[in-house]
Length: 211
Image 1 (spheres, rainbow, N blue to C red):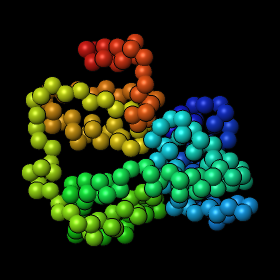
Image 2: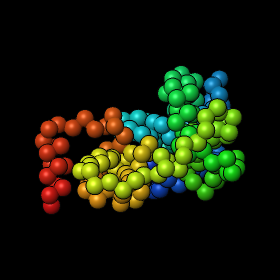
Image 3: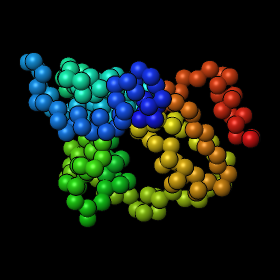
């Protein structure tokens, strides 16, 4: 998004470094706007999940750039949206059961997730992973917790702007295990809600595999 902003006349007129501006806003946002609270954790959590898709990502970027200009109304609205959206975003028991059984590491101190060097930190992971040690679910045996080599013909479809499941993760970690696998990375696409392409677009993407 930083690269797209730099290439866009309207966006680049508001910041010369989108990531740096967003990081600065995260570090300096006030605790309220008018009569509304602004909780940094809630704002950053909403920013993270809204960045999954292009339409809502634009709203996040505008809210942050406006905050850098002194208007914190967008951040206050994101704080309000947190209480309405995050509790309903998924079935949390199922989410924890899957996450704990697959990835929880009992030897790790999960209090170290808030990396100050990153733009957004880990706002969704911070409240979730510390609970993992108390969740009544055992870790899967390693046999079922590691990708196995496969020669099954497989197509991986990713978006280059996907904050939920980054294309790079599939490229680096899954694709090498698939001897008969290929990956399409859709340009200017986020997570799955963005993949509403017309048939000719899918055709163009599939045709690229033969090149």
